[in-house]
Length: 238
Image (cartoon, rainbow, N blue to C red; front, side, top):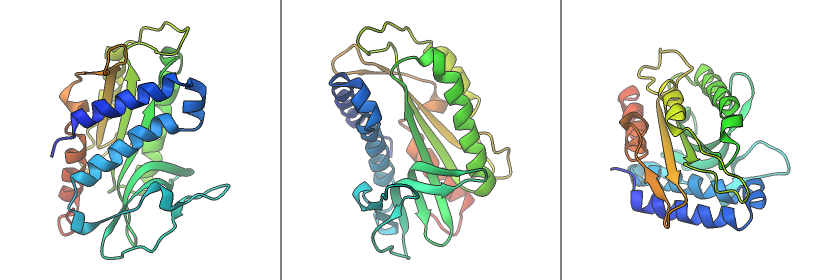
């Protein structure tokens, strides 16, 4: 089923207030971006067959002083596990993936990265772009059949106090279109199966979600992830 856009707008409004109450603290503590993580995890769960999925809350993930992060509760082996902040073994280094649907014996089936930039977008977007391609390659090299997704949020204008920055969202959209649409697991590893780009005007109340191209729509993102997984796993449908 399509993603709940009203719920997303409410999430964005909450994110806006969290950020404005203390931008540095909101980013460093991850309280800002975790709101979007939670939304994505809930929307993926809502689109899945609940009889096949064990939902593991973030509070039930083991978070020692260092890493890795693994579930701290008993696994139900007859189900897939839906988790947040999971340490995956990439081909080059470990990666704490934001949202993962995994099978205890067969590894990650669906993995979703989530990122936002609220300021200094023009200065940093190319470095982040290169980084998320590297993540994609590392995970696909190790798990070629996994269905990888990414959600990227950018504001129309920076809402950080004292900073005026117009952001070229059309240019960024063009960049993201180049790294989505990996159809077959034999294909090149430098593209995500599906990518969602959330463009937001935070100057309105509540924030306005700016339409994007259909390839990058968050509304169909979760359904497409599940459909791609099922196409590759005919005998193990979600």
